[in-house]
Amino acid sequence: MSIARTAATGGDLDPDFLRWQTSLPVDQRLLDVDVAGSIAHVQGLVAANLLTAEEGATLTAGLEKVREDVKAGAVELPLEEDVHMSVEALLASEVGALSKKLHSGRSRNDQVATDLKLWSRSATARVAAGIDAVHEACHDFIGRYGEAAMPAYTHRQVAIPVLGRLWIDAALLSPLSRDTSLLSTVTAELAESPLGAGAIGGSTLPLRRDVTAEALGFDGPPKNPIDAIGQRDHALTLAFTCARIGLHLNRFCVDVVELASDGLVTLGGAVACGSSMMPHKRNPDLFELVRAQSALRQGELTALMQTFQGLGSGYHRDFQQDKQVLFSSVDGTVDCLKMIALGLRNIDLVPDKCLDALRQGDAVATDLTEALVMGGVSFRDAYGAVGALVAGQRAKGLRLCDLTAEDLSAADLPASLLELLDPAASATRRAAPFVGS
Ligand code: ARG
Image (cartoon, rainbow, N blue to C red; front, side, top):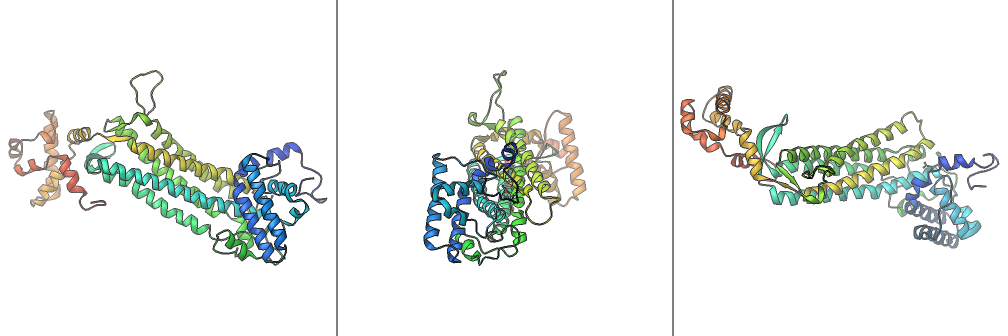
């Protein structure tokens, strides 16, 4: 009979039900943290005199052996309800009857809560490292194109000349820095150890929760056993952070796809897929795929929230579903960050095309307006006068950049406006008060 069954439980599980309900295919990934949690629990039991030092050493060595054997492929985790029971079953074959003492004062409820927190700790570090890598790629891009002028769009129309560094900062550096700050909220929510909370109401054994908490690098023991095993707020905050990173990457990808389709950005062959039929295509698949992944991140956040909604306090088996969703959210985020860092290093701004787009888009119109304001004209009058200039030039098939001294004097406007027609100079002037100047 399986280790977590008694006369009161009633017989063995139906094999089909066992196979369907086991979390082993998903939570075997928790093997390392599960064994670390068990070893800490053993330390706590020794400190509480519930195990002798020798028993503790035997159990610890047995747990380490189980971990190494499974990782080396020397043994398989047996089919049990989950990784926790599977490890305990393997430990029995390793150390015999002594393994029956391991679960003293512990439940899978505080065990899985602990495992997930430990996993989330390294997951948080992986996401943070992914953001750092994108930040580095941003600085590399800024080194190449930070001072190049490019159009900023409003309503998908050329609006104002900006510098490349302002775009990259707005699209990636600043949003992802805020996401890194959000990760410290996750870290704060991981501070408390759930171990020693038991199934829901602690234990009557004199557990040394302080010892286990310290051994696992937590700030301290559980304050409330019902809360310790019955909440997954860190998972929600982590999934939200991943969803927000996904959204930020999505919006950057939209920029790249549109800039590439306007010819203002070129894609390196290393990150561009071709068409199976049209030989001339160089498609922005990397950016389209990352753009689409944002939908998955939002779905995962929603799935997690919906899983917990409607559950009363304490542990419910529904919680089992959280791992698959959180793993996918974090893995997907780490992969997308990696792809964006790669993509960013493989795109180039095309400064000449950018300047051309700025000229064709009359992007210096606001500069001319503001120059008139500086000369004492009211904003609305200046705005009207420049609007008339734009309309006049376009009627002739020309642009503001084609203005001549005669055009300006005919419009009763100062010839000094001719000095403001260079979009690159405009971008530099405009960037001065802002970040990175
Ligand atoms: N496999 C379960 C999970 O992932 C472990 C806890 C099971 N606890 C229980 N009381 N059934 O959440």
